[in-house]
Image 1 (cartoon, rainbow over the protein chains, first blue to last red):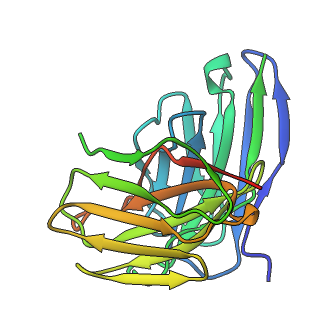
Image 2: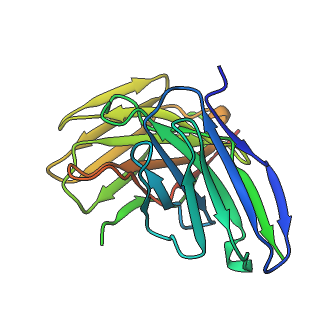
Length: 114
Length: 111
């Protein structure tokens, strides 16, 4: 019963490098989300996918792109990493339409851009 | 701009004491969620509150929702060290499918 799996758990990038954060869920959830967590700022939504085939911008989408590859997978790409993107990134999923459950979160990716 | 404000941001309390964390939000919503995060870990769902006046309790934690005041509270009774963590509230507006998180309350329970 894996839930939401994120890879990698840790990553150090040089400014200007690119990378993709992977997220997969095995709960047959419709909606998936990418958040970043910074000290004193809570969690801020980067992008979300309400259902397979759709993606929408959240509060802080600049510098990121996403792909909802299929119902299970939702990836986040940094095309040209900047130090301001140093953060902890969380992927989350929900059933969508079922309010009795909140998010199920992945374990997070700690990204440092130097 | 939708705001979700928690206070206090930091809370240090002695074991055995009671305290309340507050979550105020600026949108129309009767859907409020509480999460716990241990240091270096992910977020774990604690409570789901889906109507005005909803109250949920689990052990030493009790959460309530007042949708008219746009306020949720998380009450801690007789705190123990194991409750040390950061607590987040999250609001799901009545229109829309995005959750909005508060900044979190870092709780430290001192023996």
